[in-house]
Image (cartoon, rainbow, N blue to C red; front, top):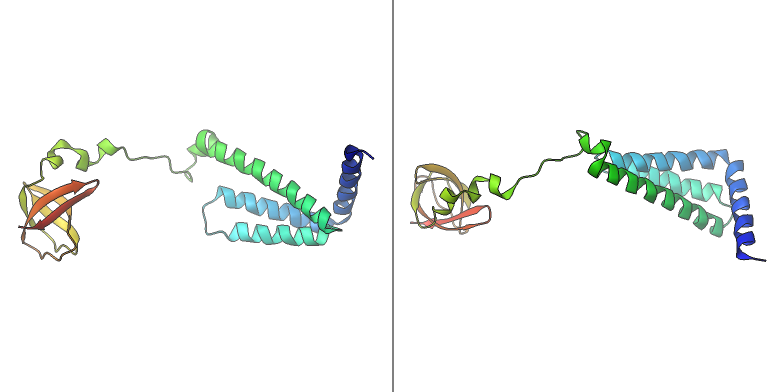
Length: 176
């Protein structure tokens, strides 16, 4: 027999087994819907875990053989993969991307005040702490309030500090 005839016969047997078992078919649909819901809403996984349990129960109840269960699992995984691709594609460019569930804002590097040329000129200048640095806090340097970080040492409130360097988003200071 050809592989196509064997595959067609197997598929017909598989469809007949699932069609006869309405409970397993309902569990299968509920499991897939719960997993799709998990893809769409933020959460801690309750819908996904419940969906996975429903799918496992459906496969255990609805399959006549381990081969049938694996074939059913393969079909479910293909359907879920296609659904996930469509959902994520929609999240990036489609209707879902305009949903309040999807975060679309981004911070540009030049929009933060640490990339301002004025803040870069603070290196080597002295200032006074407005809060205790444990190791981070606020200091007034050159007449400007700046979030600063000390070099892992405690610096009390109203002490003089000097700006050592600016590393990314951190203004590193040490006791003057």
